Length: 355
Image (cartoon, one colour):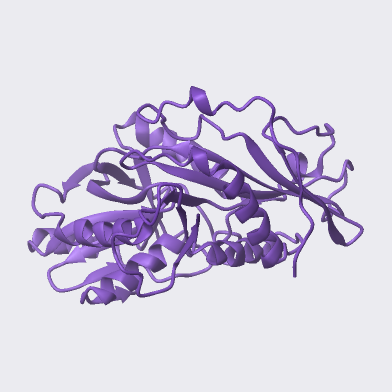
């Protein structure tokens, strides 16, 4: 199904102000954004307009009752031409977006509208895709409730939008994480598997406490016994052992990361044994003591793949990076990076190029 999208180009592009060598993350925004409204049971008024503020009522439902979801994606330069860019598994983001929407009592966005708006926006702003090493155009689709009504019920109206921003690496070093045993990210039956805004808000305070202790992030554990590893603040978790790679099995309290799934498939393609199963903090400590824990790394759209230096648990720090190596993580990261930019054949059909 094709939708009519009205395009209003900016008269004052800010592209000349972009310094590709000094981008940072999430602070510089491209020229345009995609917007579409949900009213009277249908999506209407699809448009691309210059990036700028949204006009909202103080009574906007999302502000008060939290109906707000988002996705994270990237476009990177593709070596097939000087202007080509590549999107990585964008249909998976559209599907996960709608899983979040269903749980949050929000309307589905038609996948064809999601993709058409995304492609039109990227075509318009693809000059913003950095051609520097490690650079990408971060893409943020999101939806929020827009009823100007103070009453606890699902909103009748919504805004779906996509904006983009050129970014550099999210992390530039191996991270130290603290095993979290007091606070919980999610609980069975809750919204932990969604990308709703509240999941991230609830993580801010425990993360700030961990950072005061010298850590970069928290490593969440299950909300009942705090025995089983789940994920970090914004990423999925992997442990490389002597003959296998283990990642916690998905559940209602874990986000089904698209990068996670891609790493699992790529590792198996490269000949590695990957186990998706429960992983306890004690097992990590036992593996480390036995000299069998070679690497820890985390995966996510913003972070891509980042190694962990080690983890803190009950006042004791367990360094992994000093004992092991980064052979597996380097191999799979290089494979996926090359696949995205076109230097590696795509055996999975994941890459969508725009020229």
